[in-house]
Image (cartoon, rainbow, N blue to C red; front, side):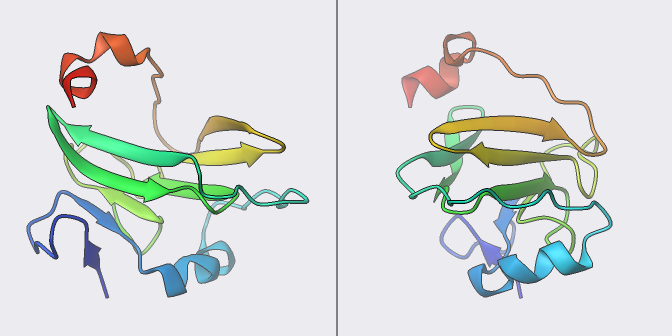
Length: 123
């Protein structure tokens, strides 16, 4: 059921919900998904996540709404690197033609500049 992002590693700290189950999340989610925009992103933008200097996620953004949380039962991408991550923590929303926003669901979100994270800049 789960797809680990680091070579099918069962101990992966970031897990991606199987692609064939992404659409089903909107009908089972306790958080009401927003109405989708007229068009979806084209996948050229990539969502990358790091644990220190190690990249643990690199996925093209081809959906207008990506839910981030602590469990793939309630999110598209599950992050178990910190116990403060809620089951449905935040969403990345596409705003055509080429903008994205982060919306909190049940967690605190801080957005910062790439340059503030030495490990990411080095990657």
